[in-house]
Figure 1 (cartoon, one colour):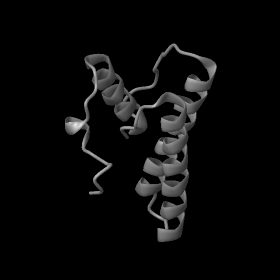
Figure 2 (cartoon, helix red, strand yellow):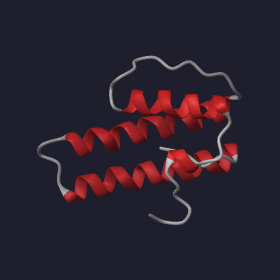
Figure 3 (spheres, one colour):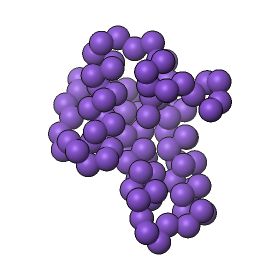
Length: 95
């Protein structure tokens, strides 16, 4: 694992941050259907993009007909939205 990518258990998140990360993780794998957050428009948009690209990556991993190329493409999109999330919020994307 790269030095800048720590497991969720090692991230220095507030209690609210940990609860959010767990709820978002559950949503990503289809275990929760609704997350409600408040914030400024740029932060909310960055969060939405990061959540959606993370979910698309997880969905691609679960596809029986996924190819290495399709998984790598979704991972690239996820990493790009995670970087944008960090640049806007100053917080590393934990998922």
